[in-house]
Image (tube, rainbow, N blue to C red; front, side):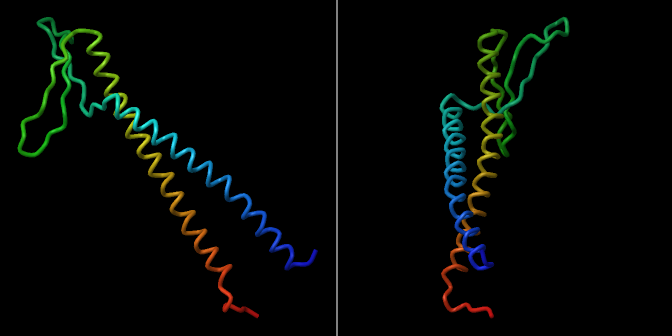
Amino acid sequence: MNQKNKHITELMELASQAKPLIEALASEMTVIATRMAALEALGLIYASEYWRKDSDGQPKYFYLLYPLRQGEPRRRDYIGCDPTRIEAARQGLARAKEYDALAVELGYLEGRARSGLFGMKDALRHLSNKNYRQY
């Protein structure tokens, strides 16, 4: 096999490997976006836990403290000491954390897709340039 045929063969092999990789990336992005939508539908709580102590100094009453917004007083939601309400609030907090982690992962995958797109466009530009001759 001469050198010219080797380059063409390798180029064809690389081109055939690209489609399954692109499909896998798209599939992974779809799975993450679907999970994010499901989490958002269940409800996200962006707050922090706060336990108000009773007269003995033991944590008794559960509150959610939301981040400060300029010009507004801090929002505090009273949850109380009901275990089911506390668990529901904690699940909302956990969903928000998972949602944020998935958003970061999705951003990373979108960056990979953008980078791959630029690389593919560059490769196509090089392959289709008929006026480019290098001797």
